[in-house]
Length: 466
Image 1 (cartoon, one colour):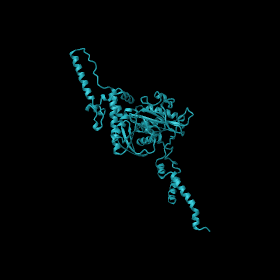
Image 2: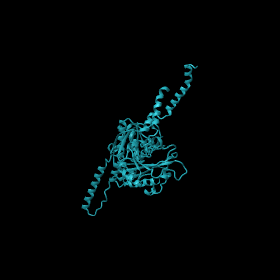
Image 3: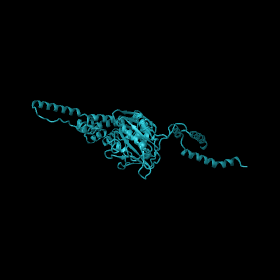
Image 4: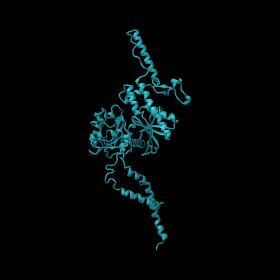
């Protein structure tokens, strides 16, 4: 008969094997935190980003059918530059939803399409933009996507869902739901911004970049460790979020002087009809004709405190003097006309143009945003600052102002990051938040008891394994 020692010796290899198995399960098995997250925050759509890349604009998917007639080239509002699609060569799963982020000035729309006219697998994320005042055009475009969804993404008619975020998700909820006859799910704006930005930072190559005059577009590789960071989201107004984790964030500040301010004032001060015309004008202007510079005051640099002669001392600081001189010249011309009727002195010209005004105001708004972003980064001890929203639009003067300002004030300790799809953070976040069909309804939690039992047994065995 075997002794207790012999039995224990025989059982030792099995115990060791079981302990090793449990240790292996602890490495590969879903953690308690992940299980809880699954229960309380159900899984969202999973995009296969393996091999993803941003498509050259010349090879973007051509618009199909009615969409191509909405805006001439089918690439969104004709007043906005083209945004490149993201090719997803390995995503073959059906996608039956689209996402919109409806702000005060612009609507950003994201949808997935398969490579319908190609033998290639996968598909792409497509990006469209509309002015909010043209909501009806956006609704018509969404109707087209609804009618073409089987061809575009492999889902049956009637299954389409609209994920909506931004203030317009509430303002235009009834309009979208009634016009499309589909479910419209509204998502929290700030959370969608973070989800979208995290996706771009960690998953999409050649998306995030830094800017300087010597290296205008230096791409940053996707990385895993990204927190904490600040998101400065510049739309009509500006919100600044401190982000500590995937769902851990707080709004720490902002300013009402944002893209809407620039758009509104320039529409009063210039003949530009839209935001991109204003940015185009700014690209040709000289703010030195409008702004009072350090050199205008000191005649040179103020090197003792690190100010160049070209540093703006007072935005629009020369306008009053120029206007006063122009008024005096106009009065003199009127007097000359009285003394010598028929004398034509010609129109009195100001010393600046609409382009100069556009550039000056662009700098004023951008400098204000950059200064506030820097101060918030100091308060919250954060070094990485991402600029999102539809304000920048790849405009080099804006990026240079923000990037240079942060480096100057922080003595090189803070870094400004920009994105190629900067305006679509909220729309992409809403797109990714699409949850499994029927989640939260009857039978949607089938199998959860098994998960909870598994968790219990795993915790009970952990002491034995150690």
